[in-house]
Length: 147
Image (cartoon, rainbow, N blue to C red):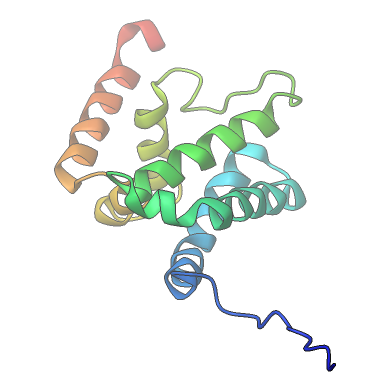
């Protein structure tokens, strides 16, 4: 009796191409964001790699979410925050005085000089919502309480 050996054939994961395209399209901006917040290039790379590694295992669920970009952005912010805990409680210029979403849009648009549309896309926001966040952040930063 011949024993038939079944070899597991490597198949690309479902939506693997879309996952790879998402990572390629966003890696640079994510890395720039993490680097500004963490201030350590190696740790910023590890941060973004950790987000993408976790994303790979949950990609189909993320795609089924209301806004995949927003979900991944929240994960990136949380991972960045987690990696900053050991940095003597440093929150960063914008994150120290603004809500997280306002601080992120300010960092992306004002500091990294991304267009509002690009920053909004990264964060999973409509451009008009990003503009509203910017206006609110600018008002908060110009408030006498923040000087």
